[in-house]
Length: 181
Image (cartoon, rainbow, N blue to C red; front, side, top):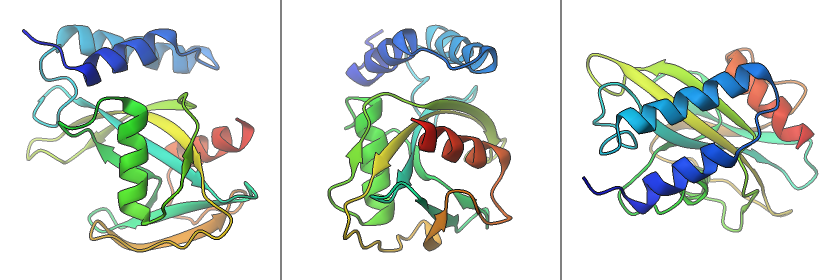
């Protein structure tokens, strides 16, 4: 069974990542167990047990606002990100690709080390599955202009301390960690 460069990068990133607390350490170890148990498909949406995803909290240049997307399917505000694709070589590259595609902003500066991990149930398969999300932070250029993608109903900047009511605790935790990093 051939392991892809993306799989190897995910193992490297998750093995070396220093969790900020015991809860995040448990999540990190769970992600590594998942990859060990699913070396051929654990990175891809086809894996029924779940799959690694990559997302990004995009902060403005002043680090006082975060760009969120009103997800077309779920009708809630989320960070930018999603599934890894066969052309992705690194998790950081997947996170940056997704953030750029979904925001339309060129020149995002991605911090190379994840800031948080999140495991959450999703319906990207008919029977449901899990996203094992590796979360990054990117800083937008001063003059950044965003463009709504087909995956979103809207994109908007929100003060990091005043997120919309339809954001969940996972998004709030990511934004808080992004500001601290």
